[in-house]
Image (cartoon, rainbow, N blue to C red; front, side, top):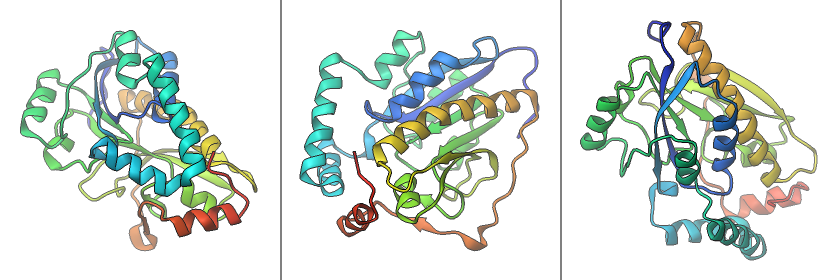
Length: 259
């Protein structure tokens, strides 16, 4: 971490994905609760979910949830779309500028970010791996929030895997971003209780909301120069990819619900 930012608010740029169902819950809490005299949101970049066309995302989600839960989720999606809910709209309503972004690694985007001159870039479910040029752009640091204990639950859908593996808590983690995925030093964690018979919907929603509060705490420590990154011991690292139908079957068999 670089030197503290003492004489002005910490300038923060968010990079996230277009998810009006779950990721938006993080921003609802963050935008409402962050201390405006200590943190200044200088931009929000919203990318396509999974960094792929919507039809591919729909196919992926259909295989994951199965037909019944997929159509329940689809009904929710159309409901929020009819209301016009989105992270971008929420940000604009709160007066935060939208910074267009195709890829965070695009030189044009990096130049746009340099012009904004953020102290911190925070990734919240950003759908691509950040490479060295964008990681090195902010003056204080580039951080990510991950809903899993690191380095054990590196990769995708950590809440799903923590429930499937029988963990008692989901560990929400804010960590430094480095070129290697989910391998940067830990800046803050919280333990979020899981139930024996739980729902993925409840856990994703709750960890997003409380994760926003963890992010605020970490950012304030970064501003004061008090954030100490705890290096990861990568000797027990694991990586989880997107769950397959057989994994969902085992998840349901364990007594959990998707929605």
